[in-house]
Image: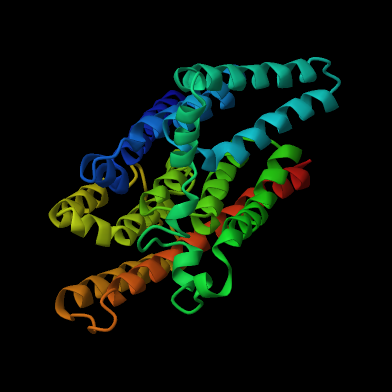
Length: 358
């Protein structure tokens, strides 16, 4: 009986890993953006996933190199930089607290790995100040405004009621965004400096990326792919949240996808994802979630369906041609902001749980 139970556990673990990999790879918003809107986010996200895997296996120098490559491929990867910095610094400080003498050398090795990788990536442009300036100008688009089109973040959603561009001079908006973003990501990152942990790091990646997406300056719709990556790595811990946010992310980008003629692909990819959503070995009597969570998910999906039907059947008023878009991004923002609050609470509770067990 013991051998049979062990074999069953091994089989369940293997199926879980296959299912988690499928959930991560068949991420609907990533498929639609990279293979419909034609972006190349999968490269930087792949480097980031590899970097996270490396540092969680204590290959910190390799992880630093891989993450530096991710940032140099897509500067949106900087959304994860606070989490990597905090976790790696926390590991070094933990070594120092335990009496290790090599922690300072570890910090220097990581710094050298990052600087060397950046110099290698930037080498073709460093010989020309004008070329360097042009690259930086493209990376820091201060001239493009507070947000791109209709994006489901705080600034776009709140601008329906508060006209930020009229209240605050354009020159001060980047600074205000930076201050609010820093405040939003601070609790999760301080937690990892003080109590670095595997799960805590992945939650911190999500919380850091969410803070950037929701509050930073000049955010594009596709930037929601950043928070979805660490949540995908946590899919065995948070299956319902990951699946719901994948659907909401697609929903939030629907105006963009519709412009690209991806309406049919939108439906097909979501149906494929839904068909694979059930986790192996899940008891139908309890499933992934409580009745309350099922109610929340059902309500969310129903509201999204209602807005889709309204967009299809009810033309917006002539004086407000983007009314449907406004409702869609507002509903999406509520989901993304709620997920960030929940994941911050969950991450900070990890330390409390360990303290109680000790």
